[in-house]
Length: 559
Image 1: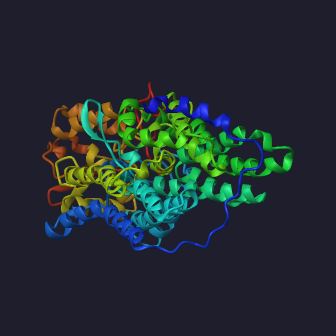
Image 2: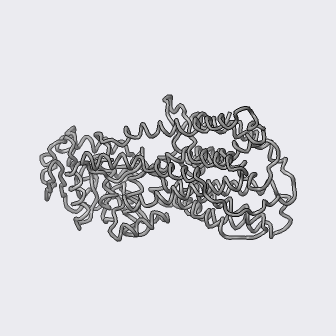
Image 3: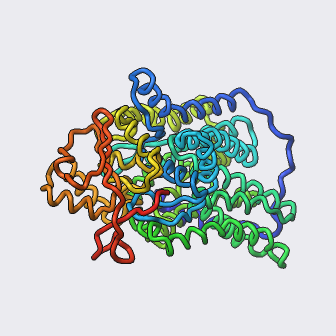
């Protein structure tokens, strides 16, 4: 049903009357009521759920938490690696390979966190500081959106509740689950940059609508769009498409250049960071390889099923003509997200196409509430009771399910770097303090932690950035540590890897001193963990030592 939405939408857009859009009278700023404050409190508390589970393990069970926040800690480890790198260069490099990589990635939140980390704050804390910014920003954005699009207090409350908390179940790769990207509460668990970008896009649309209605040319929508593009490019692409498509529908109003200045300025400013990302994807090998690694085929059917309960009701909001330009942009949001998803899935634009649906609950909530009102469903018997029950069903079960299964993703388990042993922590701290340059060879799960904790390159740790041949190299590293290699094979692999240090975790592993023998110049033991110093790595052969036929990789400089 959701897949047919673009057809329905396209058939309604031409019905928009030509001529200037009606301008809504400016109302006094609405005061908070208790219900809205309750929603903000609930959203804030939910955002702390995973952190609370982690702190429980750290405080009550005396475990060593690595500072991650979310189901998929590899993403948080990627952010921590960027912050650690930015603390040295302001611009971030790719630390998940054992070769020197250019420090050419600028992301404002990462850069600010890097400065904070350079002042002595732990990178994980410098990242967590963005959580309240993302939570409060998202709440105020959706609240402002609700107050500009619907009239009654009950309708506004419904929009805010659905925009923040809507969630539904789906079938993903044949299994029961949820699509987290379409749930703002889930995004608060480790994805502050995406949430901040969503909030900026909402504020940009509101600012654009007001400036357009007043006939003014302002910088604010474009500047907010530029920051959103830099934080999370999918949302920048969304803002550009929404503005362009909405202006295309209202093209008759553009009698001269003056009318085109606002959309031109907004699109240009929002698009500049996207040009930068495009350049990274063509000229930085790490970004080229990462783009290919993230071209996953997330099932579109899972998105359709997950969004259907709200999207089907939202289709009622497409009835009739849009009252104003903001409603027109609201109607265009969904088809724009679908278009970005399709383009991303083909590899023509940003990878990870599922991110196109971040924040989709905001426009769907507005359209659903507007559609219910226009259809007169609020006049049905016991409408208030039915509305309350429907809102509860649309917001509580999926979020409760996400909170219930969070412990299975965050609890200490073998191979999960959410928690490490004290001895592993001490070994990582030694690598962080050691003044000698050089990268680290270790098992995959501990390789996730190495860049963010030590600022050093690692052989493997993130199969988006540890490319090419991430999994084969990871399996080869496992073979070294589990003793599957002969002595000659082990020494050849370690020499070709170009690692300066070999980090042995507290997991059972082979006798590395016997395997590596004369390659080791010093051993530093930390209980069950150990760091083997191999001395400076030799020079790599070939222009790019990580690609065939040159299998060697080198990290001559520490980031």
